[in-house]
Image (cartoon, rainbow, N blue to C red; front, side, top):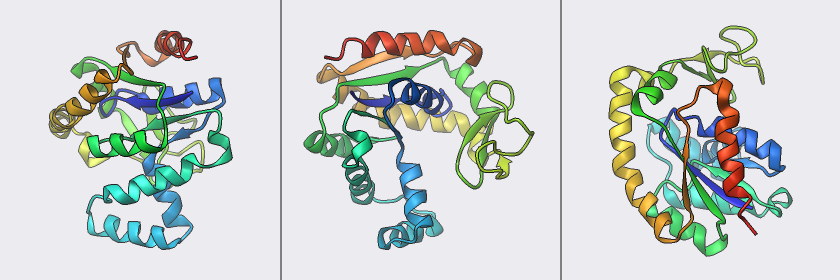
Amino acid sequence: MNIVILGPPGVGKGTYAEILSKKYNIPHISPGQLLREEIEEKTKLGERVDDYVNRGDLVPDEIVIQLIKKRLKKEDCKNGFLLDGFPRTIRQARELEKFKKMNKVLNIVAPTDVIQWRLSGRRTCRECGAIYHVKEVPPKVSGVCDKCGGELYQREDETPEAIKTRMEEYKKKTKPLIDFFKKRRLLVNIDAHYPFEESEKIISQCDKVLSTIK
C-alpha cells in the first residue's frame, strides 16, 4: 500500500505515520530525514543541500523529487510506504504520479486550538530531528532525545504568533493539494482531535480506510 499523509504542522501526522509504519511493516519516509542523511553522508547532492540550508533557502523541488524517487526504488518499499511531508505542492504531486501510484491520502485534521496546544509543547532533537511533546509524548529524560541522546529544543516558529501564521500559510498552500487528491478520489479525512493517550481512535480510522485497499 502506497500512502501519503497530509496534515497541518502539529497535528501529529509524523507520530501516526510511525505507528502505521510499524503496524503494516512499511517504511515511513519524510524529505527532511532524506535531506539530513545526504548531508551527513557528504554526498554530492548532500553538499548542494547543505549550501541551501546554510543560506536559509528552501531546497528546490527538483532535488526533493530526486531524493524521493531514489528512496522509493529501495527494496523495503516494494510492499508499500508512507510519505510524510511529500508532496507539498501540485508540481510534486504530479511528479509523484509519474513514478508511483498512490492508494490513499490520509488527511489528518484537528481544530486550530488543539494544534496550537500541541505545537507549543513540542520539542525537537537538534541531532536526529525526532519530535516529542512535553505532555503527550515526553522523552524518558527531560530535554534529552530517547533515540540519539541529542538536546531537545523548542523551535522559534512554535510560539503562538508564529503558529497562527504557519496555519494560515498551510491552509493557503495545501488547499490546492487537497483539491488535487479529492479529484482523484484518494483523499480521506482523519479526525485527530483526540489526546495522544486515545491515539488508537485515530489509528482505527486509518485502519478502516487502509482495509479498503485491494
